Image (tube, helix red, strand yellow):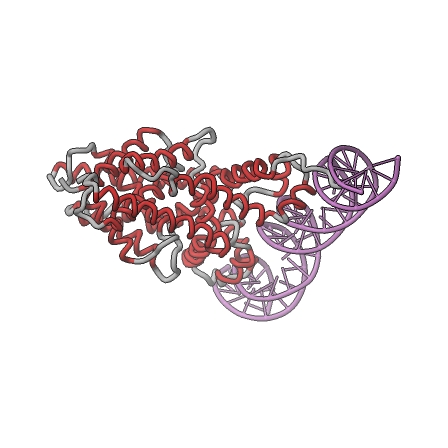
Length: 194
Length: 194
DNA sequence: GTTAAAACGGAATATTCGTTCCTGAATTTA
DNA sequence: TAAATTCAGGAACGAATATTCCGTTTTAAC
């Protein structure tokens, strides 16, 4: 009957994500997508409807594969300090990777589009809110274990770490060397200790 | 000879800045500008050449009037803690003002345009670099006075504060209430103390 | 008052961009 | 073998957008 799809939708979404991540939504033209995704214009529109839908799907895949595993670790959290460090590391790895300073896809998207695109704004808000919540519960756990300071309420500390992470996702754009990263992470970690 | 300009170029730039600040570069159309600047399309192009030049001029005016006074205070810095707090306050006032969460014009611009617009990237980089330098020298001063901790080098602390400020300029976009602000500022200030 | 420069509103233009459509070829299953 | 589906590539369309052009009005110097 019918011919089967020759490309992997998941892989195409991954490429689209990297393009949007690097250049943003508006600066990525339909032609850019055709040139880089490896599928034809017709397949692109047949499969993903339009540019905006493609962007939303890419953002959702980013959340599912890159955010959720971090904020919802499979085996629970044993070493809370290591977990927070892992959080910082994941930002670092994303930011300093192959393509110099891409920053964070969620933040980039929110900054560019939130004021004029409520759908994107809602997705970004949800991601950020869940991230802050995850940080908060881990910090509470650390406080109970006596590993983190109790001089400040867990919510304040969570907000502080969350804010530092957001900072890194942007600061990288201006100064993306490892030393800078390590400096900031060390100060943050020292703030958490009793 | 010539008719006098009926509008104040400075004021027009200010309005353009607020528009670009709120909606970003791409989402602000030429029609938006005509509708909101209060001058005609022809005057707009006669005076500011084109949209991109207008944006650059707005960004430069932003730097001159809103950044430079903060990082280059007239009367020197006597109270270093108050100065750092003032830094945080200026971010807060900008971010939480009349128009909900605009964030920071420089960071918004950098995030949206830096990867595809080297001129904007250079301006943003310069602003950010100077800001970090200003922070660093004030923190050194605070260390000499014994007001700030010397357990960590001034550059690390400066990077830390710089990063926290950048964070706030973005975090506001997701959660813009005063409590959040104060929580984060207090944790940052406590980190600086001996 | 005349004249040259500047500003204005609005129509007109040019270009970019997202999207659709078309053709021919390839592939799969009934 | 035939029908259905997919793919690539490109042409074509329509809408949006940045920019230019034009005729008119206003101002200031001569």
